[in-house]
Image (tube, rainbow, N blue to C red; front, top):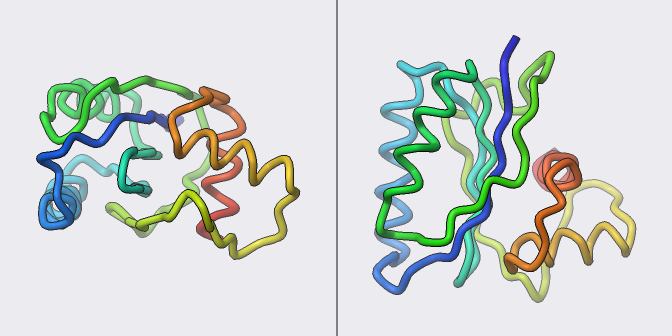
Length: 139
């Protein structure tokens, strides 16, 4: 059985768009060997990342993520056992989001939009809801 993990963090001023490109390249390179997949959402101020894989691997990765100086206030909002991956072929998908104007590819209620905006702004820690909304955002 595999696990999924969602965290939210505050982007630091040293984390430029070029640094985000470095993060994504590193993920794509390293996650293959760890059999980790997922997505990274980022705004001008926050990160929300969803990762999935063997529990031991994603917890090890999460421990490394927490020490990265490109963000701070890393908060775990969801850790679940899952039957199958949401993003099986993405070593790390990435999407920049404008929290004032988020576009979803599937139908989403107004209340879900508000919850998702709060997650992106670091204002709520609704873990289970975060996983569901990230899936809707990308599919």
